Image 1 (cartoon, rainbow, N blue to C red):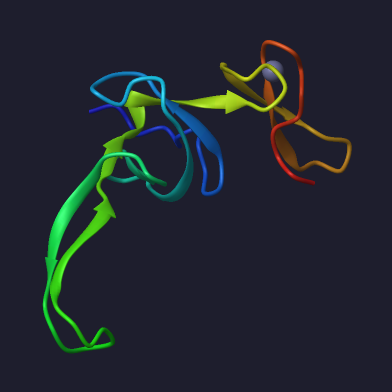
Image 2: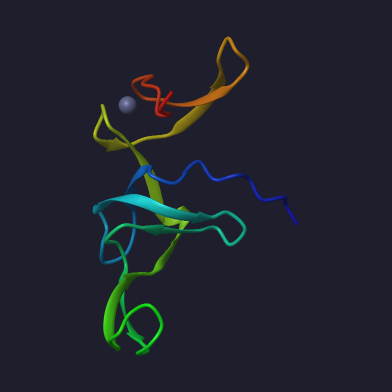
Length: 111
Ligand SMILES: [Zn+2]
């Protein structure tokens, strides 16, 4: 088995959906599960769930919540290109690494 590569998306990244009924939708990554290769993306793949009464919420009922999507089904969106782009990594002078857009060279990490 090939060792899993760290996905090129992280929490709060903007990604575009590449396949399925929500193809073309753009959302913000809320959570990444690198081990399972899945991510939770804001307003993407909404699923209805029954919530039980009690706990923190007083009322039970049906709530809509984001379901996980496979990381391979989403791609990073460059804020400058406004397109799905390939992301590269390069070291900075201080030794830390940043991700950048391979299309326009824009740095994608907030530094
Ligand atoms: Zn770009």
